[in-house]
Image (tube, rainbow, N blue to C red; front, side, top):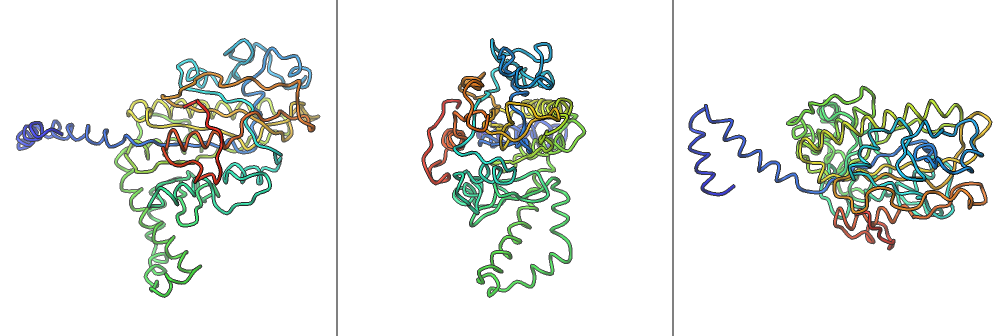
Length: 396
């Protein structure tokens, strides 16, 4: 704030009638302080079927392999001469048309693992298929570039591997008020008061005590900061909608958190896929639509990047239960106001050239997407976080 403006506002503040004007001057200061970049990662857990999400509606191989579950041309929203969105993804198509969505096709990794748990570990740690890591890629980001646990928040009751570091772990919470109250329980206080210097210097016990101390401090900060902003929009009344609403309140309150992790389950569609997946995609798209509107209304969409992935795609050929089994490469969504290459980032899946298991071959290593985001969005050393160098993409 300029000195002349400050003096003017200070004079005005001597009268209660002008307090709103005085406070409004600080709103600009607050908004300017929100300019750091935020990353929101959403996992569609269970292995979403990418072929019935972004549909190759002109490909005869698609219809030949899926006689019972393929989406007809009347059940999609056409987006190009080859590809269309599932009809329940209309809000996502609007983002696509506005230039706020990039769809990256054929994302995966060499020697894909079709286990939900192992493949999720690989995506969360950014490891090779035969490498087992104890830290997540966002946990290593916290270790290197953040000082506090609230630098990364998972919207869940427990912390997954993605936000676990060697020195710092992120915070897991669905509700900052509940987290705050839990940290104030007499039992928790009693344990913390029993700490001694000897305890803190002991390897395993010291780690637990330091984690608890940091968790309590972060819980206080998250609660006090986030309650300064309450969303005025009506989010879909389901767990995923609630998670995104809380994320928007974290971001719009000015919480100094750079990375958020949200998960939506139910995508393991081995049987009766059509209706089940359709409902899930509708829930996802409607919640995303409200989330983006919330960020736009509060001028934070320009500083927020949203990445949506699933741990693997599904088989090209449907199974006997009108569902699909675990596959390999899949599509990834990048949502934001500053996307360098909106629309379809690359070619659609080549269904005439599948791998030995009958799955879509990967074209882009998912770690190239991480490397691009770390380097071009969070402005940090991607090689240091990912433990090796990956090709950068130009979607940012």
